[in-house]
Amino acid sequence: MHTSPRYHYIDNLRSLALLLGVVFHAALAYGPYFSTIWFTADPTNHAAFDYFAIWSHLFRMPLFFAIAGFCAALLISKRGGNAFVINRLKRVLLPFVVFFPLTMLVLFHALGWGAEIAYEKPALFTVFQSVKEPIISTMHLWFLWNLTQFCLLFWLLQKHASLYQSILAVVVRPVFLLVALPVLLTVALYHQLVPFPAPDKLYPQLWSYGFYGVLFLIGAGLYQHHNRVAQYARYFTPLLIVACLSLVPYFYLMPPPPSLETVIRAANTGITTPEHINIYAVVAQSVAIVSWTGVAFLAGYQWLNQFSQLNKYLSDASYWIYLIHVPVLMYIQFPLSNTALSPWFKVLIAVSATMALGLLSYQLLVRHTWLGVLLNGKKVKTAAIQHRTTTAS
Image 1 (spheres, rainbow, N blue to C red):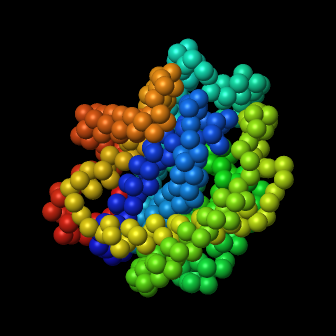
Image 2 (cartoon, one colour):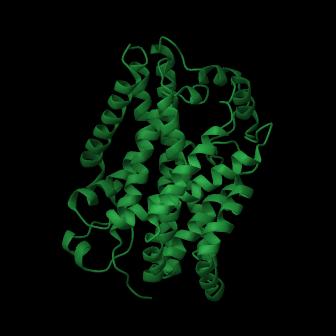
C-alpha cells in the first residue's frame, strides 16, 4: 500500500455533480417534456427547462460514477481491498439502508399533502391511481444501490492483481475512450428510453453495468494512470467543440415526450423499453454522453483543482443535501404551483430554498453528529487536508 495526494478537483466535481442534481430535479417541474413523469409538474412551464434538464442529464451522473471509480482505486491503493469494501459498505450501503425507508415515508406524506393543496394536480397523480401493483423504485437514491453493487464487484476484481491492472490500463487508452466506449454505451442503452432512465430497481439492471459500471472502471483507470488526465486536458477545446456539436443531432432526434398511457404501462410493469427504437438517437446520445462527461471531468481538472474552506464545506454538505432534496423540493414546489409566478422565478425560489434548508439542516443536525460521521467520515484538520496525504471521501 502507498499514499496518494489529495485530488481537490475530484472532491469539487463530486459536490458539483450532487448539487447539480438539486437544480436538475427542480427544473423537471417546469419543462413540458417531463410533465407526465414528474411529481411536481407545474401548470406553467417553459421549454428552456427541458433543454437544461436533458443536457445536464447527459453528464451529471456519468461524471459522478467516474469520480466514484477514481475514489475507489485511490482507496484501494492507500488502504487495501478489505478496508475499501468496509469503507464503502459504511459510507454507501448503510446510508441507503437508513435513508431509503425514511425517504419513502416522507415522500408519501409529501405526495398526499400535495394532492390536498394543489389546485391542478400533476399528471403523475393519474398514474398513481391507475397502477395496480407498483414496482418498488429506489427513487433518487438509486445511485447508492448501484454504487454498492459496483464497489463489491470492484473489490472482487482487485483480488486478481494482473487482471485488475490490465483492465484499468485498457479503459483509459484513447482508442477505448473514442471508439469502444461510445459503442459499449450504445449497446447498453439500446433498449432504454431516450433520454435514458435511472436504473432505480432493487434488482440488478445489467444495462446499468454496461453504462455506469464502465464509467466507474474508467474513473478507476484515470486514478491508476493519472498522467492520462494531463495528456487529455490538452485536447479540451476540440472535445468541447465535439460536445457542443453532438447536441444538434441529439436534440433533433429526441423522441416525443412519453404519453400518459406509456407512463402507466411502465409503472405497472417496470419495463422502460421503447416501442420503437431509433438507433440514430441512441448513438447520438452515447456520443453526447462521452463528450460532455469528458468535458466536465477535464474542466474540473483544469479549473477546480484547489482547496478552499468553502469548497470543503460544500463537498461535505453535498451528500446530505442530495439525500434529502427531492422531498424538500416537493414541499416547496406544490405550493408554488398554485401561484401565477413565472417558471423562472419559481425555479429560483425552489432551488434557493432547498439549498438553504439543506445547508442549515446540515450545519445543525449533521455536521457535528453521528450522521456527519456516517456520511463523510471523521473530520480531519484543514492543514492536514492541504498538506498531507489522505484518502478520498
